[in-house]
Image (cartoon, rainbow, N blue to C red; front, side, top):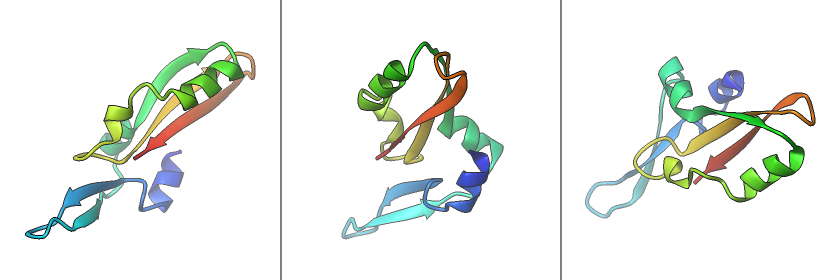
Length: 92
């Protein structure tokens, strides 16, 4: 996941208000561990794929991806039914 973030400059971006006319600007941050710690959140364990899908539909932390701050966040899960990791991302 961190490799993907390093290679996609839009993911570690911020939305900021412009000067005077309020035109929007995007500021992109240099990838760092602090940024990853803020954007990649351990969601714990989910019992099933259906629970993962419900989390994707009803993303529990929409406030995380609002101005000002990183526009990308991902909840990382271990899905017991799949015996695999999965993530749900939210991007404003």
